[in-house]
Structures are given as structure tokens and as C-alpha cells.
Length: 128
Image 1: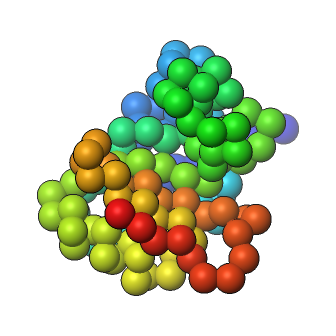
Image 2: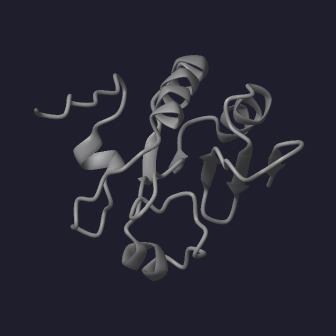
């Protein structure tokens, strides 16, 4: 029995969501992908993905923490970093939409991190 092909309307798995170190690992939480696509509909513009899921080695090479939501090796990834036009608008929408419980705007890198941390309780984390 073959696995069904996962498709996400506005994102390319091979060039945007797979680990970018060349290992081609891809293991995303499906609920996160549904929310990612819903967010893309909400902001009505393209998103330039700078970091999708990462294998453990790539996460370490990028300076990511061992509990990173980007890690897709041994668990399902539930985070993504991106930039787009109108970063302030995109950040506000990510904080207000209720689709993610972790939103960080790294202004020095000009990227927004969105994630769904299953271990986070209480209010969502939204900072810049």
C-alpha cells in the first residue's frame, strides 16, 4: 500500500518544506500544515519560506535548540520560518489568528517563526 501524496496548495514540499541540508527529510504534523495553508489564505499573499523542517544535524548547524519545533527526525515538525511583504501585517495576523501558539518576529533576520508547540499550555507565545 502506498502513502497518499501530501499536497499543500501554496507551498512546494520539495523546495520549501523539506530539510534544506540535502537529506530531503520531510515529516510534518498534518494539523500544522492545515493551519499553515489557512494562514496563507488569511494574509492573501505569498510567503518565502526560509526554514521548514530540519533533520537533527541541520538544526544543530543552524543553531537551533534540541527541542526545536522545526525538527522532523524522530518526531513531526510543527514550525516554519518565512518572510513576506508587509512583515508587520503578517506578524499581527499570525499573533491574532489563533492558528499558532508560538509566533516570533526576528527583526534582525527579517523572518517570522510560526509554530504549534504541543507542550505549551496557557496563553500563546507572541514576541518580537
